[in-house]
Length: 336
Image (tube, rainbow, N blue to C red; front, side):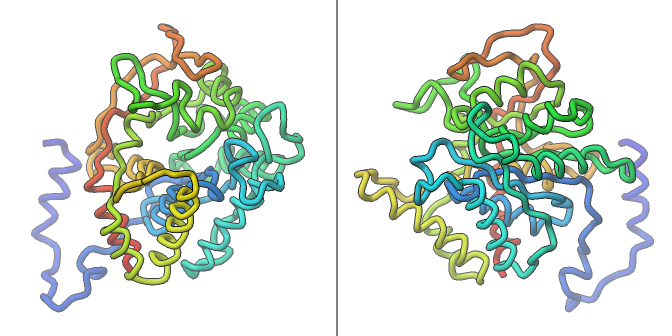
């Protein structure tokens, strides 16, 4: 048993006994933040990013410092197609903050309105400045995680503008296709969706930058299934749950004319962004309940296939996410 754990256990005898009628918050008070978090997501698209954002905002271990609303995969994904996808994402983030009663507590900026090479550089100037400023802070040693649930356009722009930020944060990315030996989903495209939002940006982050990467590829984020029965209960639990479920219902209705039958589950694929950060273990903090393997960071080709690079910096590739911890915690925090 290590000394820190032994000291904690020996200290149990000195703790006061609480009456059975004590409030839960008095018995198990929240701890101070353990990490800083930048949230970057296409919040005007698939609502899984909104669920993950709400979960992060209700997690005391995660000090959410910045929300970047990023662009979608292509203009056809916008509703309507008016070239303001990132603006809409930032607006959704502000709407969620309003519903949660924390208006203005976290800065919200919009990112670029398109992929590298298509976006006006001025599009992402505010986002780049905010990302760099948070990463370059010298007044704190609290680790910084960049949690991205879509493309990597704005992160790439920031890394290019100030390469010194790379070792000062860790990227947790929901994206990328399956690695060798793992089968893709039946009928799945070779190029994974979040990679195709901005292939050049993902290629830069993997192949040209020095940022540490924790990757949650498609086979791992597809595990994050919740049932409609669970979601209906969440929708009845309070204003935040009702708002989130309404966003999801809108998305499900939109696919009906396409002839798609989504069944009775939905993948909240961005939720590992919270599991791997806010829900780390108490002792030796890490994403201890999830499984990953270490590999040299590969390069990516134009379809997102991995090009081996034995001398690449080590990266984590998550194979299995603790869905029980993730969703039990999310539903408990969003209940009211």
